Length: 305
Image (tube, rainbow, N blue to C red; front, side):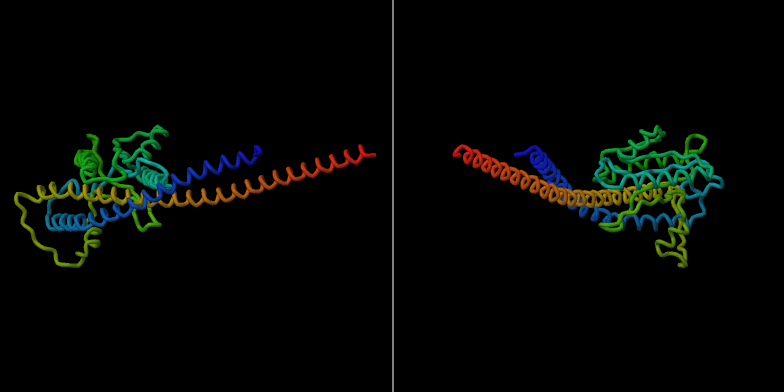
């Protein structure tokens, strides 16, 4: 076997092994998407009803609360960025990071100081490489987040917005995550969680134009909001974590399918090149045999004379 043919054979074996790996990763991601979709669907009713409850309490009470009151001149904002712990997901992480950077630029142009919170090793690595300050970070659960993980992420954010800005608190809370639209479409979006925009929430919950119910609060509306709004933030973050996980699995599946298809095409190309090299070797061997036979025949003819 010639040297060129050995190179092609070695490359075919290498690409074939890679194709098996990418195919397995594609199948694993496809199985995880279904589970992640079910979790997203299951979390929606709770988040919707909790949003309606918060809206009803906030609209029916005259109490001012730090989680619903708009600051006249906000000077500080928190941005929560959701990325993944692993790569091999195409542009999933880079798109979310780009959306977070655009949001940060917009907030800074508005005169606000931005504190960045990150979920996922990919986002942390991006900011660490660029030596950017991160207020807090979390890793290890991006593929299968739980409600306990959402509570852990929400706790310092709620504490920050309840503090005075001068003491390290923030006036606004924004979240950047990848929304799962379909198996083929995942869109990075940014959403302001706090302060809660009551008019927008009322529209989404279908209560716009309806008669507002009257409530009596015991012991007070502030205590009710203190109990409801942290749950609201946790549920929104949990839903965003689930959507991000589903989007990541879909992006991984798409990337691995593309890699598998490309590996198949490369194997076909290398196989054709290997066949051409083998044919060239056979042709050369035949030519050498024919040439040697002709030379031997001429030599024999000359000796007979």
